[in-house]
Amino acid sequence: MVDKHLPKDVSPETIAAQAGGALDPRTGALVPPIHIASTFLRDPDNQYRSGLSYGRDDNPTMLHAESVLAALEGGERAFVFSSGMAGAVTLFLALEAPAHVIAPNIMYWGLRKWLLEDAPRFGISVALVDMAKSQNVVDAMRSDRSNLVWIETPGNPMWNLTEISATAKVAHAAGALVACDSTVATPVHTRPIEHGADVVMHSATKYLNGHSDVIAGALVFRKDNGLAQQVAKDRRAVGPIIGPQEAALLIRGMRTLHVRVKHQSASAMALAERLAAHRQIAEVLYPGLPRHAGHEIASRQMAEGYGGMLSIRVEGGEAAAVSVAANVAIWKRATSLGGVESLMEHRSSIEGEGSPVPRDLLRLSVGLECVDDLARDLEQTLDRL
Image (tube, rainbow, N blue to C red; front, side):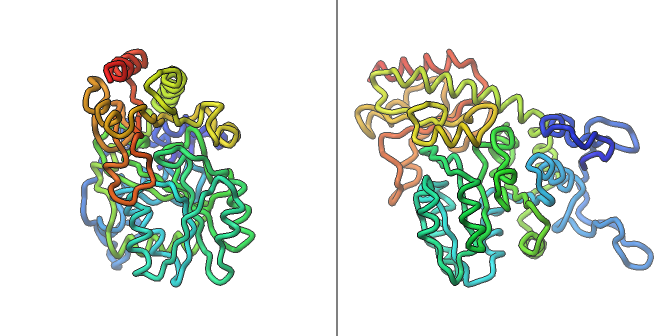
């Protein structure tokens, strides 16, 4: 838990580094214990005054992770889940049906696919729009039941930017809530609640954990309101939580979040500038580059850099892009992002039929390796095309 003895004005960076400042009260250990119990003792009068009853509902280690997350994002309540998808889908299913959701046309493909193919079965209609302009959100609103606007910024894998404050103003005027997938930005770069979002979602598998050894998701609510309470009820009923070991690894990862993300962001910026001049690169997609369409929004909305993700479009089309991914030595061909190792992926073949991603695009997740090594590995591979 976030220690009440920490100063109230302490920064998120300090909260993360000290895991909320919590100590083991019995031993004084700086690393909190992992509670693996699946069940908890009732009081003699059959009550649970500790607030803990059964492992499917809550666990002290999981609650600790949630308290740190809430503090990092500036929300009143946080929930962790067994994956980012589990958290996002739980939020959508908690909406009162029939519901109408507005989401970006470029977003994480797994959630995009679920919204288009499965959400209608639960009384949820979906409009996908280009959110670079808030007017597109206005045009997609339905006066009868537009009750959630879903933002993903920067948007995977084109790294489109959505201005959270402008979108929130439009949504709130229409009586809709705003949820923001801030997986790539992380609390280091953007705290969406400060810009008007009502809910922040993370695939905590990525930067929050940062070591490619946990699958987890998170929702952070600005207010502990009716929607948050419905999410709590649904999670309790279905049980899509993480175990205590995974929660402990997530806490461990968040302790180094700021130093990792700042390093990765600086390396991504250096790579983007260097690769933009390469003759075999048709385009570099990175919000930190002034030529990127979302650069001005990113500069207003993101602090401490522009993130550790970029994409490149390779001259020669799909075959050339696939060849690059097949022949790099340091970059690893693997799905995911935000870990300490650098990953490369040909996105359109991963997403499959219907993907809006250009077929010459490679998505790059920059890790903690020497940036010169990463650049040389990619440049030498491109030179051999």
